[in-house]
Image (tube, rainbow, N blue to C red; front, side, top):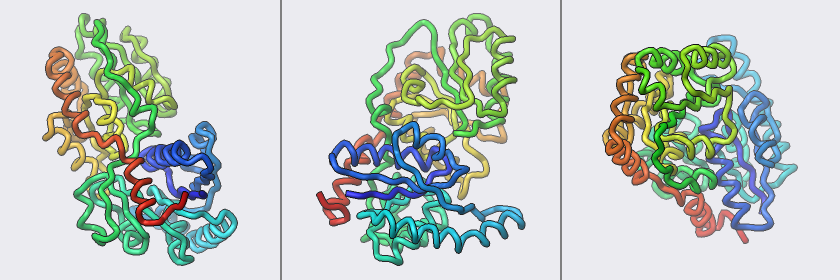
Length: 360
């Protein structure tokens, strides 16, 4: 069995692909997997650590880009199609899986044209232009949200949920300790606005709260030094890193999470049952992070802070409101767990077998 998984760029696209790849390997002993991405994407750092082979193609995004970046991306696109053609002919996969990101477009387009079996993993409620178009060509679309159904042909659509890594699914409920741990991250590159607000919030937490809270904070490379220095100067217990490779360990140690509202992050929060303060990325396409966050707030699993209203003082109030009441944290955790679809990978594999897209 040969699988080609195309896409990445961000953890939100890549990690569902990794979760699904490992599920295939776990179920089928003879399964050869190749990832295709770009040199600049997160996949070039993560996949070698995960033990997967990676081939890269030269492709960039063009939605919302400035003129010269758009011109360069459009100029390179035909070359990415040629690279995709060569890779597909050389590897000859039985199934091509697009997980989103720049590299998935040309690979899926060429694979569909050449008659390879193809599927898409759509993480967001409202799909991007590439997946909307390719969704009519591929054999199956696996969606994280039921709300995506209207964007794709019904015969090609399957509401599977978003694949989550096994190590996160294996997290057991943390026992309540005297000190609460808050996990902060803003995506693989960090988020300056979240970093700034968290550091400002420290000034609004009193001495007893200072002793109550321990922090795990992924800052991104650019903000690492000044954020680490701020925790030290304000005498807070904190583990500050530019990037957290072992997110399962970080989730397991945490009581509360402050983060963006990407679909993959939310799937991981639901799988691990972690209550969250969600701060949506304001420039996300179709405002999908705001839609995601609003839904979780409505279900009682998270608190929502709109980017325009983000401040250190307001964030400190939200932290205090959640941490002081163990009952509220438990209610949020239970609501988050109820949202999880922890068998997404198995559903996808089962559906692929039913449709004859893979053969044992």
